[in-house]
Length: 177
Image (cartoon, rainbow, N blue to C red; front, side, top):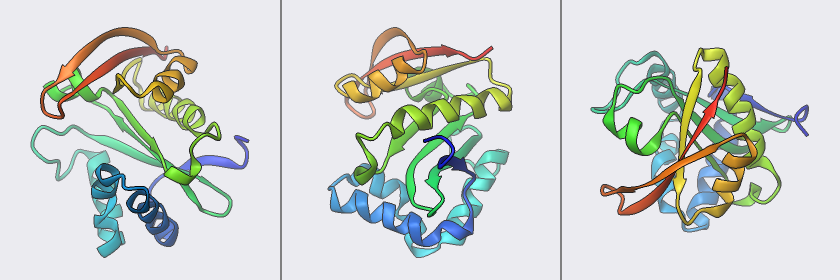
């Protein structure tokens, strides 16, 4: 599966397929992810430029840290998921709640092992970037994500309450080196 499914950096060639993924989130009623990505529907090139700038630490919003984004795709350029690797802990929110890595799998691509694969490939990228240890969190009720993290070597640390999003999160650490 890994040969036919891989990570790519955000690129203008994926405009149509990224729009399809966004519409999947909308159709599934997953407004959180739809809202994260919907800016790409109006100006995809600007959206990709913004992601590239975030990777360089440019034009970050208040409290954000540099972040590399990658898309899980296949030879048909279908976007199966997204992974974000935060390369700094210079934010209390990152240190406490969202950690170094966040990922999501598009609604129609779930239940096919893509979660485990995107995190595995993302951990390889994090190691290439120079991270030695990463924090990954998931909603306490999201047992699928917890299993994905654990399958990739995640060691449970604790639960924490995120007042901003009114949810409990499970915190996991993964040693890369």
